[in-house]
Length: 159
Image (cartoon, rainbow, N blue to C red; front, side):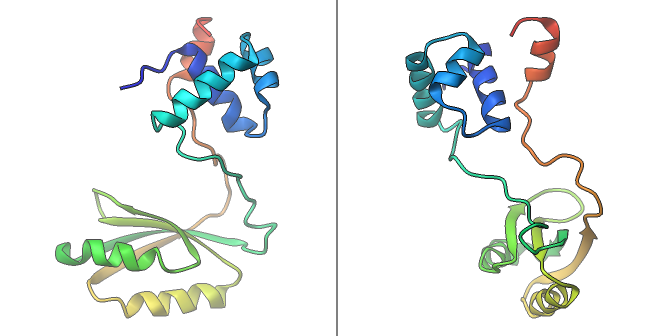
């Protein structure tokens, strides 16, 4: 298993806020050479810590003003098949099998109330769903994965 050190954490922190940062700029911010950044980035990718490079979209500006979180209670022997079917819904962008009050959680975005209703109609036809609960997002407070432990490291002066 790859041991992540403070330099790796700082690289990850910078990349989560600026994924387009060049190796040269990353090196300057972290205090190492760009070749060291490239080496460390390759190790982070190879270890699976960085799974992919992507962009964060503003769904509202793309015309999807309604974002919802759905918690679903599904009969145990249908969990995998329902979760798999949910991944085929284009409006659903995140599907998780979870523990707790529900056994499937997903996130979706819709252009209109009518589109949301149409998806609910399709959900009602899936075999195995006992019930679902919708929460409509009213205000986004944070939408980025925080690098674990980095804030406390920065406060302590280690990084």
